[in-house]
Image (cartoon, rainbow, N blue to C red; front, side):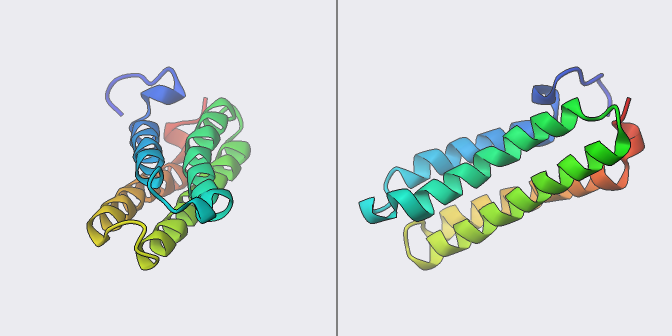
Length: 125
């Protein structure tokens, strides 16, 4: 862990997730208007939820079970985001290069989340 992490915004996984969500926001601006209330909304919400749920998990780290449970929600939202990215790619709303890069980012995010779930003692108070 190196430096002491004081806030959820200090977590590398949070920073990766935030950057990915902002990238998705920018990339989805060009999605067709008929997708505004479906795919565009879903992918933006799930990507942002990764960040929001990480903040929530960070605040629940006083209790290991609550921390792990919250991180499980983070994991689910990150996986959901990958599904929406795959749909975006298949519908040709994102290029293969864009979608694949974002999906790889979420693989990295998921790896970090799973590590936190498997090693909660490094994080709980």
